[in-house]
Length: 128
Image (cartoon, rainbow, N blue to C red; front, side, top):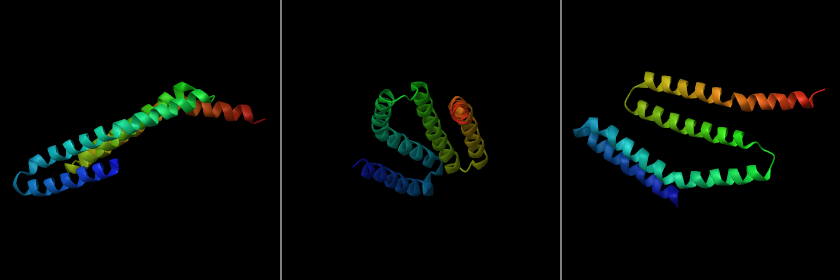
């Protein structure tokens, strides 16, 4: 029941942050970062299992392994970007959060171009 651990860490961090903000608001960010890191560590095992499953499925089908690697990298970039955006918003830096979000989206689009190109080539082959 990893979800119970994750929710527990989140709620405990929330309570600590509420208490700390009364006395030392500058430490609230550190508690938030620590909670985020702990949650990421908890889900790394699950992410490894998902990657292994996708790799096994890819090996059994005609899916290009390069595309699978790209999809995993894109997913990782999306997670990291969302994590950074959340931290920026927690500190009240909405403008920086928007720039990080935009940067993540541009990188994801640029990395997905080979997949899009392959998809278009397949569609062109199918059409008369």
